[in-house]
Amino acid sequence: MRALQLVEDRKLEVVDLPEPEAPGPGEVTLRVKAVALNHIDVWGWRGMAFAKRKMPLVIGAEAAGVVETIGPGVAHVLPGQLVSIYGARTCGLCRPCREGRDNLCEHVGGVHGFHLDGFAQEKVNLPARLLVPAPPGVDAVGAALAPVTFGTVEHMLFDNARLEAGEIILVHAGGSGIGTAAIQLARRLGCTVITTVGSDDKIEKARALGADHVINYRTDRFEGAVRKLTRKKGVDVVFEHVGAETWAGSMLCLKRGGRLVTCGSTSGVSASINLMMLFQQQLRLIGSFGCRMQNIADAMQKMARGLVHPVIDTEIGFDGLATALERMESRQVFGKIILRVE
Image (cartoon, rainbow, N blue to C red):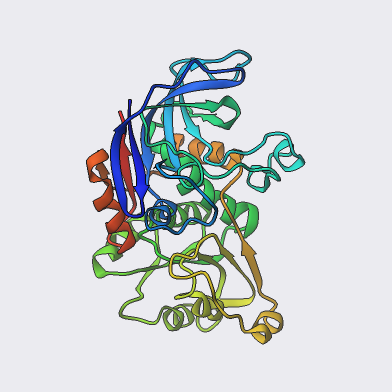
């Protein structure tokens, strides 16, 4: 079977691998249909792995597939069923896992496509407990975007930031995959959405998703624009994932008692904090990583009901991945790049 491997930093190869053996107890064999690219793929491609890993490594952290064969003891998925894949190899046994707080697993084995072989391969064996069935009305692309693109945002906005109807939210990088999801989810909740983009051609696209105000951060200081839009009051929530470039400005955008929730650091991992601002304004800074499996199910239900939809920049085959990662690195995309495996 074909697979896409990272053989060294910034070097990808399409290779032939043996097909997986028959699934063991609690496992299934999946035929992968679609892989959604994320910044974690860019980090791995350019050598920013935060744990030891061995190459060659099959890439791809977010994907969906169709169950081909089930092993002994598997009951909640059936052959022929479309499923979304939870991308971290959790233990399933520790207290957080038992309580449905999967992304706080105490014995996680790593993230597929980053520390472990990922999903850019035609078939893979996985524990059935890491699969979330897609409801009717959700296709392979939608299911592929549920674990990171929509699941991460569900966890950030609703589990962590506790976003409420009527609040004002600043969504950074509205043209990114999670940015497009955050705009839709916040707007559907009934929030006023302010978002930033990096070029004028993305402004109308962001507005079409439901953004009330769109700021080109390359031509305007977003913190000044936000203060003006909110009459110097500030926003209730800042949706952060850019990192060092936007951190100080994001803090300035918060109203008294506001919440900043962050899941990323694409522009750098270190930033300084004005402690007087933090305690005097009673701000709340919330770290968020990945999602719970329930967030994936919730996201797909919203897709099935037509409340949100995947925003696709391009679809590619195996031979287009290196170019796609370069485009993501330079922020030239609006929405998601999908790798079709089938």
